[in-house]
Length: 233
Image (cartoon, rainbow, N blue to C red; front, side):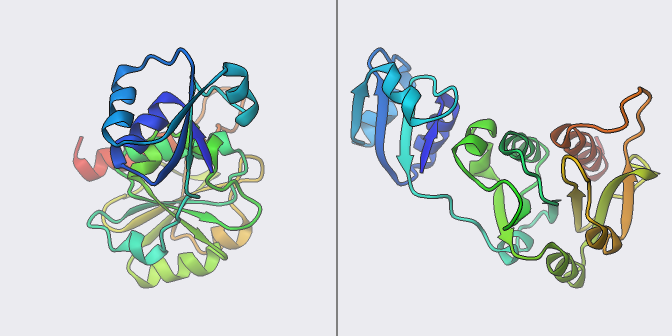
């Protein structure tokens, strides 16, 4: 898999991931990154910018890394974390949204994100770039059935908090204890079966004419309200 961008490269080098090869634009001059490459004795190749432009579809900032494909965690790994605060994504399709959500989750101390295997964005170079390196600090689990996963989490003592347009204000929900917040698809929201298996439903009150928010924005609002309550901020 190819990943790219200075922040992503820095995080990968700092974590000492299994980097197979590095491609640098000929005038690349980020001293800190170059020093890390040199200290780890990693192979790199200097190329023209147009070569990098052809390799990836995005702002590579002069650096592209070839690494192993992303390794997903199991749901069991997520619930063994000391802080059981999870986010479940119900078929988020836009990789930029997924990356932004992961970045928000990392900032709010969410240590686990669950995504479905089918009809949803998966972890690729675009997601990693959009996460700005945050993906290295958040465990991602991919599951075949969200409803079964939610039922499993409930047996493990989790409260499942869904999101929709007409329900309890997100500021009135109790986010203490083991919780998993469900964020719905960009267009259709949370699916019926997933909603039926939620313990609570939260809504973000809006005063304008538009009645919905971008999925990553909605995630930020709700997870930081949860963080405020959990950390007594």
